Length: 203
Image (cartoon, rainbow, N blue to C red):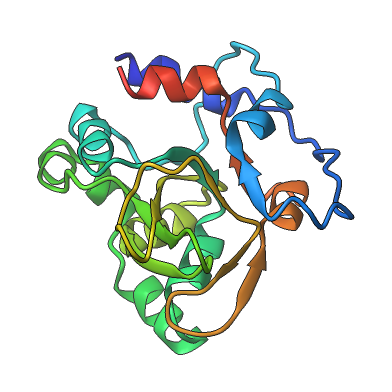
């Protein structure tokens, strides 16, 4: 798996608003495969000055082992909002986070082999778990706009991760704040990655 090429693909997305049918009340779940088909991927060079958390083979293998369903890019501050209960906790994480260079150093990067992620309840949209808040804070401090995470769908009864759809509305992990995923995608705060990127990731 060529992670450098993968990052080039991700950074090639144009900033655009998805033409989603926000009035279709029958679409309670997101079909990520259909959404990704709405986006075109151009193989252009990644900008050298775009700060990102460096992913390696161990991170990708961790997502496979954890049976994650999808990979998206998310605004790092949005990730922190979803996984903290108030602004004080968010600021504490932002204050305690080390530099992005620290997390991207070979020794630390290899040691922290758990891929940043969100675990989301399939039935309720409640975020039930997360990984990678301090790394998200580091990306934000470095001026990064995107943070790569895996999405794991959790079923209340079976705890089955193998679900390819999820609710349109997510609820924060530690409070009742809700997030309209359609809106966040249209506002370019979450990127749904193409099926090509997904397949490359799981190699």
